[in-house]
Image (tube, rainbow, N blue to C red; front, side, top):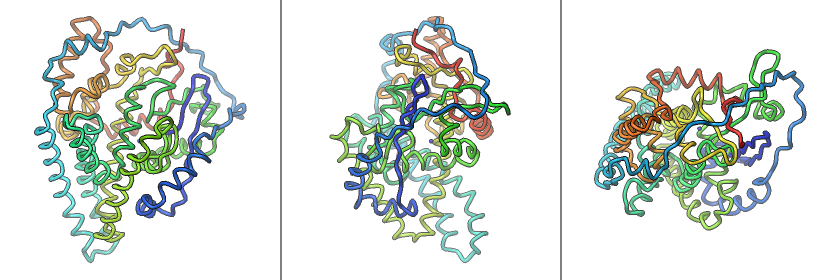
Length: 430
């Protein structure tokens, strides 16, 4: 897997960070020493840049005239939903959470041994890298499981003890997943409180289609007239493993997750110090791993699996929030419950669902009660939610798709849809 902010009239606010580091490794190691000065200068010079409203397209547009009718769906109140779910679903069990954490750490550490052996072998470099690829996939998938544990900590669901949540989050995210935990927690919480709102959502970009060009390709005026966005769209097939890297390091679209700047930090001045602490933990961990493993060892043992984890994260997140009929809401047409029911539960197959702690097939319940239901209760919560909706005649609110061919699905949807949303799927203010 930001700061694009797309208004209904296709006005775009852009928070841009210009990275001066020669490599991601140098950025990591020097982040702690330069964070304070850079944050101040960057925020002052770039955080409020505005991309001018683009001029007319050079290509002829076939403008869509589809306008959705006002929603006739009836939505339940969140309080009523909660009353009709078992109280046990909302119980947070620290011991159970830490057991999952320990098991996932063990799996990840064990998965690294083949990569350590290969990195210290005398194999020719091309053969060494080729031999490492299957183990990158295995280790990266194990790391994705750990990311899900840190995700629970970000929602205060690992424990009722805030210190345990912070320690778990810093260990899993700031260290192992190279993701400053507190900073990610800040932007992620804003995503949850504004999911599927054109104005309020974080982490997801919504580019409303203006129509098609003469070649039948989807066109958005802003993307068409902003060279680097157009370049990103044209090269989208190459981006999937690297989009989380762009999100964290370049602050697209939410703002900096290492250096505190951009819209995610607006009005959050009292949290900057805590955010820099998480950045420092990540930088310190990377510096320690580089010293221990060497530059190539870090790349092969740590960064290779990290890219696989990043692919998992972007794929799962994208598919949770994109579907053929998924709606985004303008202004007062949005409500928290409406946005939550636009998320999609997807069945990747029992093995992958369990390995990912039911993040994919329990996402609707997670969005309804993102600070209430820990991952080990999502499955039960989902079944009870479906039963309640069926009894109330509201079962059409729940979105579910079989997605066992998840690699094929993300490849197809990403290449066909990208971040575009059709006008028919935009619910306007009445």
